[in-house]
Image (cartoon, rainbow, N blue to C red):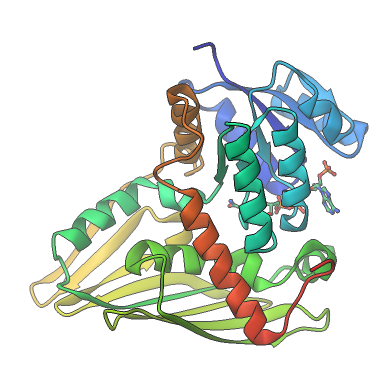
Length: 326
Ligand SMILES: NC(=O)c1ccc[n+]([C@@H]2O[C@H](COP(=O)([O-])OP(=O)(O)OC[C@H]3O[C@@H](n4cnc5c(N)ncnc54)[C@H](OP(=O)(O)O)[C@@H]3O)[C@@H](O)[C@H]2O)c1
């Protein structure tokens, strides 16, 4: 198969990180084009990242017949509309998290991709990190006995315009869709994607979206999880898995490169450093799937995306939080 041509939709923070990552990888395709709502911004991004083609609207990107796959890096409020545009024009899609605003939108996108035999995957980059492969091996090997509890916390404090943007209901703002998705996604990786029950509370901020979230999960086998995420307060990104014979501590669990296994026999650290910045693994997985003719990654499946979106719908229903248009 020829080299894969990527298109990037948007020129924001994470779009820049994506372009910078791919330019450092020798074994993947290239970013052929970038699109912004503004031509000047697209041109500036293209010049900065050595991208050959720049477009001043998203439509032009999906009409470029040389683009194979589009990385959708717009706010989550727009993922449904933007990913749909890509699929309708025959493009495969890697779409940022949260995949969409709600599970119904996710299901509609997945159904469209299946109908058109196109690949679509949520860019839940954390799941592809090598350290999580090692962690799965530790858990399966019984390093801490039977898992009984998972705990995660993550909080950051943006300022100025970024603070307002992070909470804007029109952009599906709030902690849950921005970072709660990481805590839920990793809890699901450890304990399973089908908890028996979800109990949650949130403190809503001045823009009517969630500032502080506390989510408890309950599983049929008796295991539990407690997840705390917030925007507005810096809380170290940290998680821990508790078992009948010890615990595993995950510092920086969203960007995991090492973890500590603590048992009665002492403590040992397991390490798996990134080659670049951690984004390389989801990029390679997307390309592997495209080359294999897959429409779904076996690593981050459609069902898993739908399950996490469903948990977020349940949490928001418990808080009475709806976004415009829902
Ligand atoms: N995987 C990760 O580590 C990670 C980290 C951060 C964010 N994310 C996810 O990636 C997505 C983008 O986040 P970000 O932090 O990159 O956001 P950002 O810096 O605000 O950039 C978003 C970009 O989307 C485009 N856009 C289109 N419609 C827009 C609108 N109505 N309002 C504002 N921007 C609009 C803009 O690009 P143009 O003006 O060029 O069109 C803008 O620069 C979010 O879903 C977020 O959750 C993922």
